[in-house]
Every structure is written in structure tokens, then in C-alpha cells.
Amino acid sequence: MITWIYALASVSLISLASLMAVTVFYVSRSSLKRLMFVLVSIAAGAMLGNGLVHLVPESFEHVEAGQISSMAVSLLMVGGYFLCFVLHKVLNLHCHHSGAHFHELPGSDEEDGHDDHGHTAIHPTGHMSLLSHGMDNFTDGILIGIAYLTSIPAGIGMTLAIILHEIPMELGGFGVLVNAGFSKGKAVLINFLSGLVAILGTACVLYFGETIKSLPSILTPFGVGVVIYLVASGLVPQLQKEKNSRRALVQTLLMALGVGIMIACKLYE
Image 1 (tube, rainbow, N blue to C red):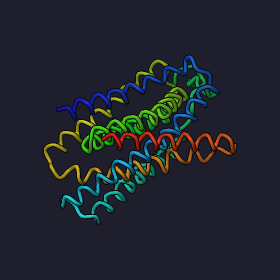
Image 2 (image 1 turned 60 degrees about the vertical axis):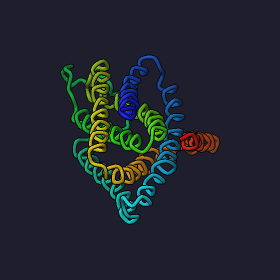
Image 3 (image 1 turned 90 degrees about the vertical axis):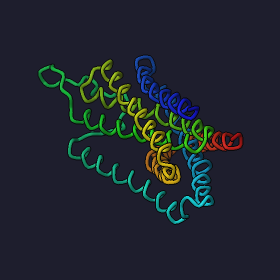
Image 4 (image 1 turned 135 degrees about the vertical axis):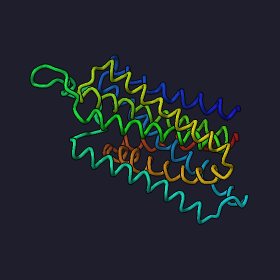
């Protein structure tokens, strides 16, 4: 029961992160970019640290307990990574055909979202963004559930990592919705409702994890593959765009801080 309480509280907190989109009303574009610079850097380290420091050792503890083979663990990690790759590829293909872009920030010159006659027009970008965002939130919920099945400290660490990752994603998603033609108020509401999908992901993992005893040994290594994909394809490429040597050093230190936080969580398990 305590696991359910912690997990649902954590995923609810992550869902509330979608309301961070309101900060675009009060924060300048330059300030927003500085905030995201810090959050993405720490999030990359925190997610990487949580996956490799918490979930990988737990995966092989299931091997030592005789619940799963080491080969199966490795294949499940690859499977988690490969599934994310395929889903991302499918969404990118749809984006290409609809002209969608999922990573624009709020504040572009196309925010009015009106057609030539002055009427509100919702571009397909908005609907594709909703699908992508909902899948991303559902994945976050699954990762939270997997981490809490491992241990409460691992769950807390994953929650912190996802929050740091989610705030920039939510702000970017808000910008895409506004650019697609949604009003700012409606975009905030839609972002929040989409965030609630994470709760469903967590509840499913916890429920089936308790009823199917072998499920944690399968989901934990699978979650490792998902985490590594999110870091390798989503966060690190953003960090690699930085060409200023001083800012790159700061990014590296912030990423190391994120890893250090996850190590500290592991030591206190």
C-alpha cells in the first residue's frame, strides 16, 4: 500500500508539472531558455544515473534470484530501446507528412494560430503533438511504476529525473499547441489533461506488478532500455548543440550533479 501511495503521489506531482506552461505568461523567452538549459542538463544526468545506478543492478538481482536469465535481461533492455526507437520513428514520419514540429518553444512569430480570414485554425501539428505528448506521459507513468516496484528510493529518484525532464517538454509542448492555433488558456488545460495519462501508466504497472509476480523482473530491464533511449536520443542531442566551451562545461557539471543525486539516493536505500 505504501508503494501505491508514494507512486501515485509522485506521478500526480509530475502531472502538475504540465501547469508550468503558465510561466510563459510571465517569463521572457531568454529567461525561459536559461531555465531549460539548467533543467535539461540536470535531467540528462539524473535519468542516466537512475537507469544505470538503480535499474540495472536491480535487473541483475532478479537474475541472481533465478527469476530471469542474464540473456533475457539484456534482450529486454534492447527491446525497450528498440520499441522507443520505432515509436519515435513512426511519429516522426507522421510529423513529416503533416509539417509538425514537436520541439518549438513558446514565443515564436506564428503564435496567433489564425487563418487568412482571421478565424482560429488548428494545424495538424497540434493534434500530432497531443498524440506524441500523451505517449510520452504514459511512458513516464510506466517508468515511475517500474522504479517504485524496484524500491521507494529508486521511485523518488525517477520522479526527480522525470520532473526535470518534463518541465522543458511541457513548455515546448505548450509552444507547439499555441503555434498550431490553440488559445494559451486552452493549451495549458490540454497540456494538463494530457499529463494525467501518466497516472494510468503508473497504476497499470503497479496493479499488474502485484498480480503477476514475474512482471517486475521483466519490466525493470525493459525500463532501462526506455531510459537510455530517452537520454541518448532526447536529452543528450540537445546538450551537444552547445558550442560555447564555458556553457558546455557548465552543462557537464550539471549533468554530473544529476548523476550524483541518483548515487546519493542509491546509498540511502
